[in-house]
Amino acid sequence: MRLLVGAGVAGVLIAFLLLSVGQDLSVYADFRTARANPGKTYHVVAEWVEREQARYDAVADAFWFRAADSTGYVCWVRYPDPEPVGFATAHKVVLIGSMRDTVFEAEKILMKCPSKYKEEGGTGGV
Image (tube, rainbow, N blue to C red; front, side, top):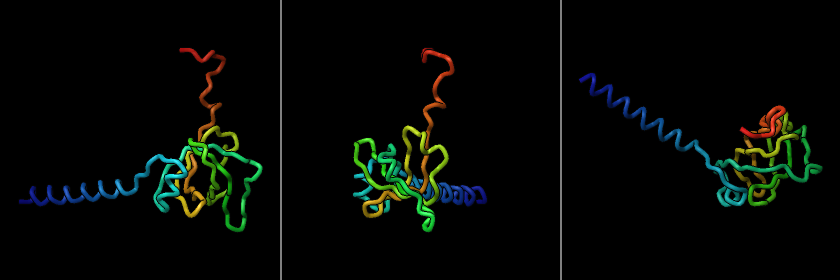
């Protein structure tokens, strides 16, 4: 009887975990898709454009910049922190967040610096 109750409890916990994780997953999309589904979390691969328009609002503690997604669509991005370290040298970034009106509200910014992946003194061959 204990084994049956234990298996039932374990099954309920596993089902709860799967449902919880499934709701938190976000998908890769572009800004237009995010705009069509406000409030839903997306990963948007983007490139920082119009760099001279970027600014940090100290009162709101937010970094504002313009980004173009993989389709070329450009929109404002608001990140609730100062400009991340290494952001200026990143070739592409992944913005994790959701669209609110015409602004993408980025909760996280993931970046890769292309210089980290260049081979030292090599020709790029195997």
